[in-house]
Amino acid sequence: MRIIFMGTPDFAVPSLRAIAEADKDFEIVLVVTGRDKPRRSKRSEPMPTPVKNAARELGVPVLEIDDVKEPRFAGTVARYHPDVIVVAAFRILPPSVFEQARYGAFNLHASLLPRYRGAAPVNWAIINGERETGVTTFFLQKSVDAGNLILQEKTVVGREETAGELAERLSVIGAGTVVKTLELIRDGKAVAMPQDESLVTKAPKLTTENTRIDWAEPVDAICDFIRGLSPKPAAWTVFNHRKVKIFKAVPARFHLPEQEEQTLVPGTIATDADRLFVLGLDGWTEILFLQMEGKRRMSAAEFCRGFRCEEQCPSFS
Image (cartoon, helix red, strand yellow):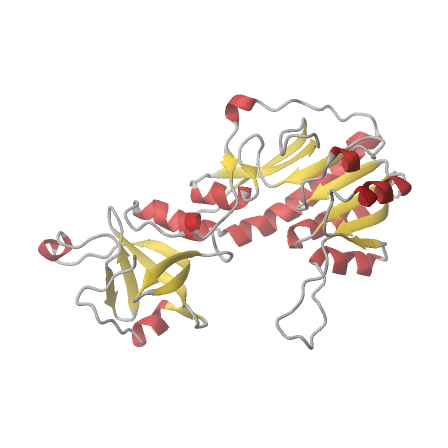
């Protein structure tokens, strides 16, 4: 079976390696990925994508591309005569490309579709407090993430698991699911099932606007929000007119005198023995790791030791 693999980030690498190490019937004839990214230093060589690095190690031909809608790209794909196109964390392919595959093209998505269709399924699952998620393979069609389902694998979301940690686990689970999907297609046993449109939820792209912390939320929701965006792009807030990224936080058993606490607003900061607390709607959140704008990542203890604020009642906003 001739396979073209398309992917770019770390999430896609286990799937590429799993195909290469699987059944001898699977031949990866081409890997398609994004172009090398320039580094900050002009003297440094551009940075290859993780998938490109893995493909080089495997000795597989690599094609870097900027625009998947460019007409010549579909022609290039056709010249490789793919039986299947496997997509993992890549771009939205036009039909002129994915229809070149003899037995179809399928995508590995990091959610249990039709839940969390979109660009950031791992992040939004954690932000929304889900206790279960998983991966899905589905055949590509014109509508994004709406194709017929092939396989799903479920997993429990750890109560303190960050988006980065969950994505890494799902990439490994997904690699096994990709190989199983290829085996079903090869053996003519892939049964495609339509998605239930009544169960669709969205996982929109993460932006500056939707990653800002709302301290007026319940503490559990605040902590889910922070771990759902950790380590990247990171939930953020403002302190002394400067942006602060928060990487880890937990609900806290912390209280101030009742009369004092009743006068405070969400976002109010309190410190105690190099520990950092922020008031939420229904209690206090303890901040463990953060990064001030223009500074390195630091522990809450480091922040507290250098704590400076001109306000009488300091707060995050």
